Image (cartoon, rainbow, N blue to C red; front, side, top):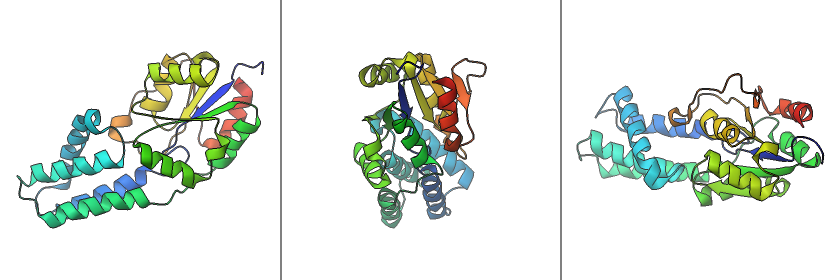
Length: 234
């Protein structure tokens, strides 16, 4: 291949399939469970603070979210949280871990187009290893990828390593995802292209300012526009 691009990376959660909406549903359930102990706004602030503290310990994903909810419940009730509430939180987390995969519009077509175009296609996601492997297996997309990288965090150094290992370096790679902080800014800093695909309200810890004006930054409305963008760049 003689074009600019040889490798295309895809994020998974909320890029290829729905994810954040299940966190929102579970957080609403969490708020209802603790309605007699604290106001919803205060509870959300405390939960976000716990998640921020715990990422370094638990990483990203459902299990860390569940532990942060339990920790928050203990804090806001001053250690008086009923065991039944803890059991409900655990049950809610287990339901999230069992939830079937629902692909986003154009996801399968976009990955197939990249693979059929002769590019190396890599899934780059972060979170719990077992949960991400389960989602990929259920998605039906697994065989389209030339490589899968499940990482603890997405940084410029991580992208540089992945695109060197699976391709011809970051300068000939594109990353596609819904998180400005994880999927767009770091690959651009590594020397690659960052393509932003908005998907609802991003998690507070995944928000970042877009690199407006950068030559390698693009935004598309959905994955249906990706094949045309690949043709334009590559």
